[in-house]
Each structure stands twice: as structure tokens, then as C-alpha cells.
Image (tube, rainbow, N blue to C red; front, side, top):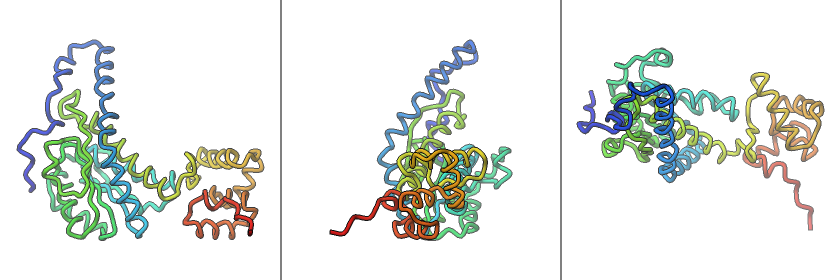
Amino acid sequence: MTKRCKILPTTEKRNRASENIDQLSTQQIVDLINTEDARVSMAVARQRKQIAAAIDVIVERFRQGGRLFYVGAGTSGRLGVLDASECPPTFGVSPSLVQGIIAGGRRALVRAIEGAEDYPEDGAKAIENKRVRAIDVVVGLAACGMTPFVHGALKQARRIGAATIFVTCAPEAVQHIPAEIIINPVVGPEVVTGSTRMKAGTATKLVLNTLTTGTMIRLGKVYGNLMVDLKATNEKLRDRSVRIVMEMTGLSRPRAARLLARAQGKVKAALVMHFRRVDLIRALAILKENGEFLRPAISLPEEPV
């Protein structure tokens, strides 16, 4: 079993501002929590260079055919699974491209299995079970920075040659972390001592949202700020698809819906069909020729001189 950092991490320290929170009124409790939460976005902003570097690594590995794995326990693990699960409907990618690994397995998503995080060999085994390769990226998630399950997974990933990234809110743990890029938003002690589902959890979610969103933008999954690669798997997303086509083409709702139907629900293809005046097969070919980036795909060819 990996030994925990002997120095008390920031995530476990007492927050002096909330020492008497049990004596405050409801409104004062709300105000104090909100004041502490306001520190989170700035802590994440201070890690902007590390986050950008991590995105560039993920983009590079994706272009090589690699995948992204989040590995965590408890709140951190759940946030990794959450971010991974939202990538397919939002960006139209395969569920295998971004995956979440949580100590304790699927059951730990809905019920705390605290002891599951204590064994580094289980983390290493999880990496083996996912058949992680050298072209993949493994992102360790641990608010305290020293979770044995996560460290075991990262060490195994490094042995394989995968790119490694770590997200932690504990500056004391940074020197012990086996990763190439460390993202360390220091949000300070929690309002309730050690409850890292609060500020640390919020910081982690902000970082993960930025990692995958930034990556997908770099890969052409977004045009402007429109999610043109979404999978319309429910009524809300079907409506969004129609509205995106309407927004970009100026078509009426009925005409946009008919165009999407001809494009088999594929927003990108529908837009190429509209702007290039081609059928679905040709639209898909044009997208492929342009690396699946919509902007060059809908640009009209230059007239020959």
C-alpha cells in the first residue's frame, strides 16, 4: 500500500473562516459558502498554462488514435466518469474515446466505497484491464494528491508509455505525483474540513470540462460556439440540431428539418449539403477531405484564375 503524504494536505486543513459555521444563521452559512466558492475560478485560472499544455497532449494523442482515461476515487472519480459520459452526446464521439475509471467500479458511482481507494495494485490492474496503450492519455484525479489507487494507475500508465496528467488541489503533494503535467488549482481548505466534494470538486469539474471541451474544439467538433457534431438522441438535442441548421443557413424550421432528415440527422453533413449544394455522400467526402473540420468544408472553392 502506498504511504500517504506525511504533511497534512491543504484539502484536509481547517478553514479558519468557517470554524464557527455551526453557530451562523442560514443566510450567513449560504454567504460564507458562496464566498469560499468564489475562490475556485481564480485558482483554476492560475493553472491556465498547465491546462493548455494538457489539452495539446490530448489532441496529439487523439490524432494518433489514442484515448483518454480519467482515474479517480470518490468525488474525483465520479467527476471523471461524468465528464467522460457527456462527451458522446455533446461531441458525437465514440464512448470508448473518453473513459472514466473509478475505484470500486460502477457501484462506487452511487454509493461511497471509501476503502476501494487504498490499494495501488487495484489502480494498476484497472489500467491493464482497459488495455491502455502508449498512445493513450491517463489523467489522475485526487483532491489530496496522494490516493493510492490513482498513484498505482499513473505508475502503470507511465510504464506502458502513456501520457500522464494529474489534477490535484493539494500543493503539498505535487512533488510526490508521478505525472508529466500536474494541474494544481489551490482552492484552500474546505468550509467543512476535508469535504472535497465542495471547492476541490468544483475546481476539478472546471478543469475536466476545459480539458475535453478544449480538445474537441481543437479537433473540429465545434463551429463558432455551436456543437455541430452532437448526437441527437432525444427531443431536446433534435430541436437543438434543427436550431443550429436554422442559425447557420437562415432556413425556416420546416426546411431545416427536411435538410437534416436528408442528412440522416448529421448536422455537419447537412450544412455542407446546403452550402456546397451536394448530396449526403459527397458532403461526407468533403468533410473527410477537410479532416472533419466544418469551416473549410463549407467554404466555396476558389474560382480558377
